[in-house]
Image (cartoon, rainbow, N blue to C red; front, side):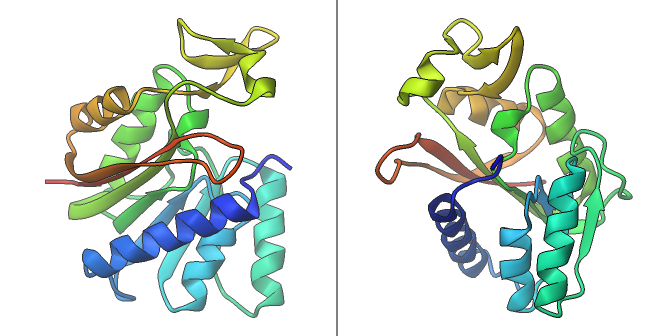
Length: 202
């Protein structure tokens, strides 16, 4: 499966819930889930009343997410689309969540990802990012890791970026966000360090 493990999903959900509590995000706020995959996070938040939209470029992921939502009698807007070219008006959302998507965005597309997130956020809106960081530690990844680009490269195609925390933070700041909080979340068992970051659109 191309989406995060159940442990990764649960860690992200719990971390987001803590952020929502500390930042006083409530069910009146509109939320966008970038790279929603099979819909775990989107559905989990919708179940407790949040107004949330999920977007993913994968047709399979969106179909699966819609099926899971339907099984739970949830009416959720799942959109098949490009997170680097969001099909939403400016200032549409109060919160934008990076659902472990940014580390799959490579090169100049990362600027598009962050600028689109900024564009659709309202002034004072919140951006959260959960992204793999630091040097990879898993053997299957190390086999394809290019330390110069900090990417996993398979058949000449870069598919995952393992940025240093300070570099990812600098990208977010350059995209006109103000970073409010960040932390490194170590792997549970096997896996990879994650940078969790909370930023605001001034």
